[in-house]
Length: 88
Image 1 (cartoon, rainbow, N blue to C red):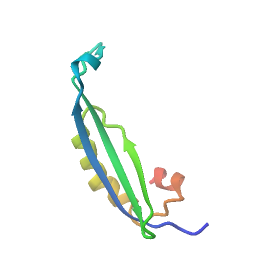
Image 2 (spheres, rainbow, N blue to C red):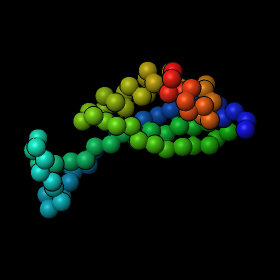
Image 3 (cartoon, rainbow, N blue to C red):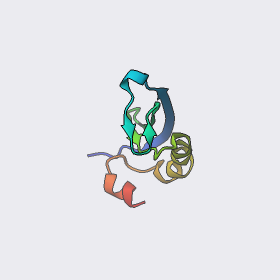
């Protein structure tokens, strides 16, 4: 299997309102919105993969972390080396 060099990592924080009829009550209150951080990974061959990062109730901060610190650790790595990337 040949290397798939990662050339770009980009995170997109998203947030959208929940219709009050679909809202859920939790121990911390009623949900009024849904948050997510969608992550796009691009390789030198133009292959694109999509994933999600856990936002921990602050999608903007997590997306910023992915777009700065984590990006620096991942760009240039082989996308096949999942264990190696996690260790980094």
